[in-house]
Length: 122
Length: 397
Image 1 (cartoon, helix red, strand yellow):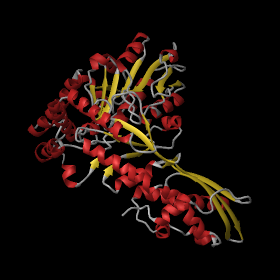
Image 2 (tube, chains in turn brown, blue; image 1 turned 135 degrees about the vertical axis):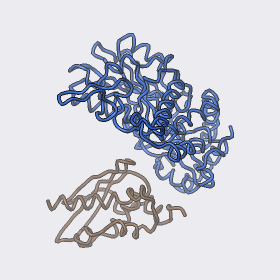
Image 3 (tube, helix red, strand yellow; image 1 turned 60 degrees about the horizontal axis):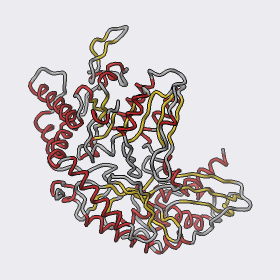
Image 4 (cartoon, chains in turn red, cyan; image 1 turned 45 degrees about the vertical axis):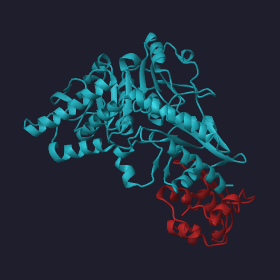
């Protein structure tokens, strides 16, 4: 079955939380060297919670749709919980089966968010 | 051409349309059987034992080189077997630059695969050499090379056919110019040797590299041709067994060419498979292969141009490679998405930067879709691709 299901296409065409935050305390940009997908994330973290998130991204439908779905899922959540998110959580959120190559596209935004959070602590 | 039946991959993957032969080609059963035969009957190390099996294995290996030499019109001692074309180009780059002086210059082009770009770039950095790049014009041809040549230019490394766009460089003319200026030429033949007749005496290049897996053969074998007089002078790249003549505590004498460049146990099974691939290609005839692929390309260009929103990066060239992107209202449909839709229809095409990021920057795209042909492709394959592309556009409408 096609991976381009309605929820994916909807989030690709109209990505939620897209753009730049006016006020943020963490930003991080990352890319997937295999396909050139790029993401730049902006996070506003307060009292151990993710108050707000926005991102700018460029790439395939999977990477953009996942960033959109993920941003909605983690907004307002505890930072520690976000840090514990893994591959399977992302795949559950988007609800499609991906080949290992495409999993990298789907993981790009979570990887960038985690790196951003870790960098902030360091 | 009706050869699909010789390729077991199509039997084992019903409905597969394989259009990524620039990345790697499929192998006919003649090649696969030859490899199995080697492992079943002859496996033993070469140039070592005096027992029958080792003699036989050595003979098969050396026969492969003779066959390769006659395929390319050169001498067997001018053929070095490596693990792949990347290693072949690294060998040329390491050994050739080690003989240069600080300030000497290496010329490459913007259309190189990373394997004929990054080694030179990095070696120039560490050895204090000048690294210069010939630009690519709007029409995918190279800018005037003569203008880039200086008194310091010692090496010119460039591709015969671009893997990303299918542009063809006039290697014979370029080598003539280089020879007149005492510049050593290193040609990446990965996309030409599998598809057209290569006559190295006629091209008159100094080095020529390609990979066997792109020409119906097995993975794990790259070829580097070097002119005899240059190889004699060149320092070895890898050290170890088989490349030596005499080893003492304080120093080592090296073996004759080509063995001084082949340290360690080579991939004998791949060499045997390569022999079978050359036999197979010769039976069809390289001229016929080139003609057939050009026909397919003409047909594909016609069919693809009927797809709405397609942008074909089309050099005026004769090589079975077509690079393109699909747009919807000026918005790029990412090549990975296009190829994923095609994959649902068992159509295998390449999407990505084709290890040519410098060229992608030039085209101002992150990546492209690429289809590339070989003898097992048919016009029906192309019809199916054109239909699938129209559907891909609907998915992303």
